[in-house]
Length: 360
Image 1: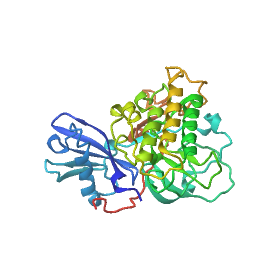
Image 2: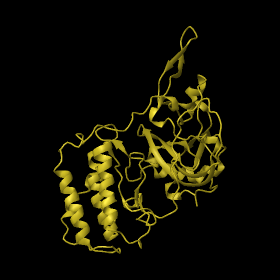
Image 3: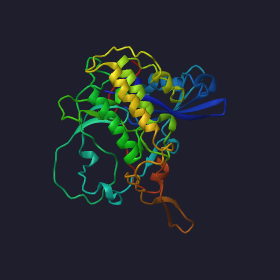
Image 4: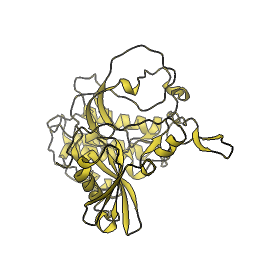
């Protein structure tokens, strides 16, 4: 089951300073809701609230809503005024996925239809546990909806505070970051103990695994941010592993000063280690210095990018001209009601809620 703290997310909104409109994602049902009402109540401009009022409205009224309702209007006290299931007001987008045939790097990879996956659990936003029965068949038309990964039943290094951390695991972490940054030209951008597992039963040099690449980006490209660089991530990760202090990781990225941590005379040891703290710090400092001595422009990596380009979606009908002829265009997404209006095939991700009373 998805942790209740992560089920809902305020995904932006609009305001004219009299009325606010907030878009709330329900990861359990995998659908968006629009919550509208007076600015004095929803307070979208209040950064500290961060959509909390809209999320509270959805939690409070969700059990009263018909399945087709996607828009909720409340008054200045947060009481329900009206709802809407009008398709033209649907906040959901239709995503147009690329054809598998247009992705040469994925040819030969095993595929499975989404309808064949059997849901076992919902772990978090966009992450489900599923299984399937292997079968042979001929697939005539395939689009890439997502990628599956093996499920490993173990705790992250953040959750398992009794796990002994090894020098070899730190070496594996710095090596994999070098491989990502310098060979693949990819930045993970969210290196932290919560995204690392250490498997003692695995073969040597393959015991540490870094996961959760949802923030990863090609270095220097759209989505890449210097303040999220992986060198910083490794520094704060090792500090947290040793001290069990995640206060630096919880700071906004722009406020994380790696020099403050590196210059601390003492990193208080609160976890069992297979070597002394100074030995771990020595490896870290040497690695950081080595990376600093490389080309100052991180975009000048040691090799060209080996990450294949994302294939573009195939054209869809975006309009009908005055002669009644469909107008085709290649778009990553459009409003769902418009996609359906022109007869495009739409993947629907909605599903029934696993929890019927999210207010608790």
